[in-house]
Amino acid sequence: MKTFNDFNLSQEMLNALNEKGFTNPSPIQALVIPEFLAEKANIIGQAQTGTGKTAAFSIPIIESITRDGSIKAIILTPTRELAIQVCEEMYSLIGKRDLRVSAVYGGASIEQQIRSIRKGSDIIVGTPGRIMDLMERRVLELNNLEFFVLDEADEMLNMGFVEDIEKILESTNAEKNMLFFSATMPPSILQIAKRYMGQYKILKVENKELTTKLTEQIYFEVKEGDKFEALCRVLDFEQDFYGIIFCRTKVEVDEVTKHLKARGYAVDSLHGDISQGQRTKTLGEFKERITNLLVATDVAARGIDVNNLTHVINYSIPHEAEAYVHRIGRTGRAGQKGIAITFVTPKEMSRLGQIRKITKTDIKKQEIPAIKDVIKAKEEYLQACVEEIINEKDFYSYSKLANQLLANNDPVTLVASLLRYQYQDEFIEESYARIEQNRISADNVKLFVALGKKDGMTPRVLLDVLHQNCKTPGRKVRDIRIMDKFSFISVPLDEAEIIIRKLNQKNKKMVEIAKN
Image 1 (cartoon, rainbow, N blue to C red):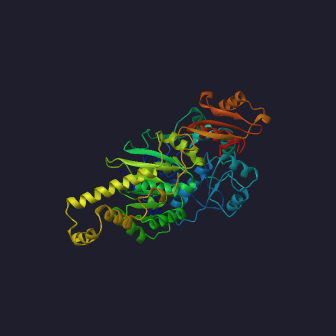
Image 2 (image 1 turned 120 degrees about the vertical axis):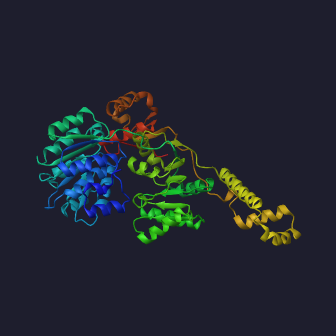
Image 3 (image 1 turned 45 degrees about the vertical axis):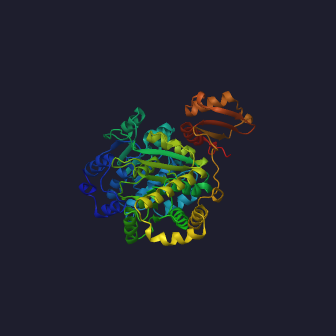
């Protein structure tokens, strides 16, 4: 098996990869990186999302780029979330190099992005629409590029970005290296490649399942304010829980860890601000099961090599399917089954639909364990522990004290009092906080559409709009309600993600998940 050491990379890059816990390249990385570094060929890389495409183009660009004060590389992405993710990934690979990456996308302050670019940017990562805006304002000059990357090319063409991509390409210099990455290879991509790439190579990784069948994937629908209580329910219900809880930010990691410790859980945390010495200590205690819970960010969790995790919990759903695949891949290893649980708020249902679509897996909805079921699980665990002590006859040192207590009390009163002393309110149902559930169908999402009777909307017209713009079959649309200025519809999760993305391209905030 190849390692990154086989690619003749700089020591600085090897250090950055090592810090991220990357040792062996993914199949697409193993194909693209040496080919690009050796021949500077134009490349179309075909591989599924979640297979490490970002590093496949980031590593060669960072290793090869020359600085002269102009923009040397541009990476086009279909969504703002992916632009942010690519930017963060590139910065994690830059190390101590004096390179600047700017992410530009709609829905954020263009003035702030302009200031960032004018401070000096070597690499631009952005969505086509915002790139075009900045070019029209003469903020972006792309006539001295060394690299042009189209990430998730098939998705961008599906979203109608063909004309924008061509206009951007026509504004760039002829001599540059081009890399297209795509999960599929429709004719439209090859037409663009033929027109603008000249000679190119297609490097293809055969499709395979991104997630293992050994990992059961479920999600809980929960309000943001109920997440922590839901987490505790899961931890209390699963008595042999041994796993990682993923959060999006360092602040969230610290908050969750602090509250878990306050409730008495054996937990520790990992994120980028933790020293190497503390990281080593934390991982050592986790591997030895001194702690059975580890709260971590994605970057901090890279390189954790533990094969017998029972659970992975996405406390915060990741922005991209690639991160989801990396997270849940930490359980269901070495022939052992595992469970991946994702907490999803109503606003995040479309993101869940996108992850399900890309990973081609059935992430099933389940209900958060009920209070009575949590208490029953605790009772069964307590009984099992008591029986184990009795069977091992490991109680004799307490026999004298037991006789003294029994002398003045009947057995039931005595045991009940000891349990109350030890467990306080832990077995009392009224002491648990309530969690609101069942607010959205497991299969459908209710959408708000900013078009109503005043816009000429009728059920028939709205169905035509959805079919023409989103290819949504009318049979998938339910509960159509046309009001004066807006409408409501219910559609499956996968369709909701497509409708939101497609219609919002033309008019921002035309469609969003309805607030209950």
